[in-house]
Length: 77
Image (cartoon, rainbow, N blue to C red):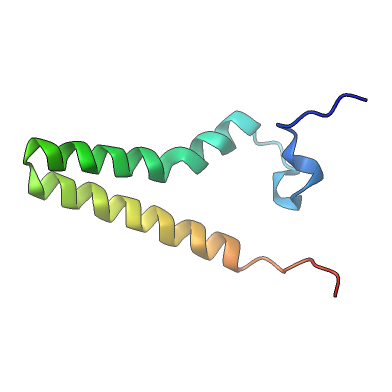
């Protein structure tokens, strides 16, 4: 039996959808990309642009937080 490490549908019910797994992985990497862009603007000395990208990163984190915090926690006690 070959185990596919990229098949998240067995582990998490949200991934049982028609959305391609590549798109889900890209969305999950989005906060890291925006934080990198923010750091790049900071190193260039553009404080306003860096703070703008930092706010975008924070909004993405908050959106994902609400997305994951509203799920029922499926654990056996």
